[in-house]
Length: 216
Ligand code: G16
Ligand code: MG
Image (cartoon, rainbow, N blue to C red; front, top):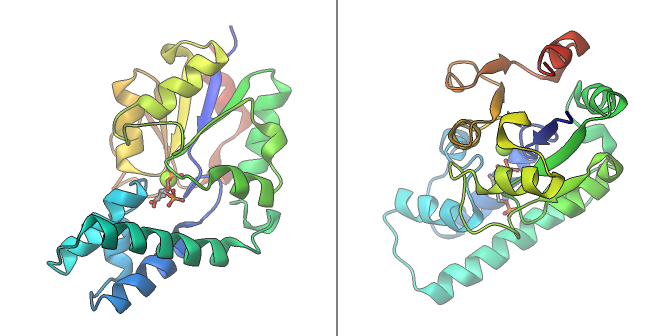
């Protein structure tokens, strides 16, 4: 039967984390909060609202809902200005061959991202045509590690959770896949992603034979 290969976006297909970092750092600076690349690790896979709460927590700052709303809009405007000129050169190494192989074998490809900017990013890097289904931050109410984003993607394709395979770079995303009884594949640091069923440093290490081994 057909499988669903579900890809996270940030940290898996493209490295937008560096642009999120720049935009959050700009805001943190204006608020007088120290925000380092190490702090930024905690924001990976985390929703926009939750990310702001974490940053405010770093500075022991409280804010009204109006202020938070204003800062979230500002952060996103800055982020959008940083990603404006993204193109296919920013697709991470090895991703395109894996997408092409999965498609050549007749299986489904889906996106399961926390980002509300996922669609414009897929368009900028010119890979929209690969995707049979897209579920992003605009479609879900529960953030990873809740499996909602991945389960919705599988449902859209009519594939069971057990026949779904998730590529993720965040701990919360691996947990979400595991909770849903999907196969989880961690991309990145093995020390961070130890709960994943399989693990690769990046997509250049994923051979067609590995994808094939998941099909039975
Ligand atoms: C991404 C990033 C997170 C970001 C979130 C929301 O998730 O990893 O750092 O906070 O999306 O993004 P936006 O502000 O664009 O809605 P993912 O799930 O693609 O890794
Ligand atoms: Mg990610």
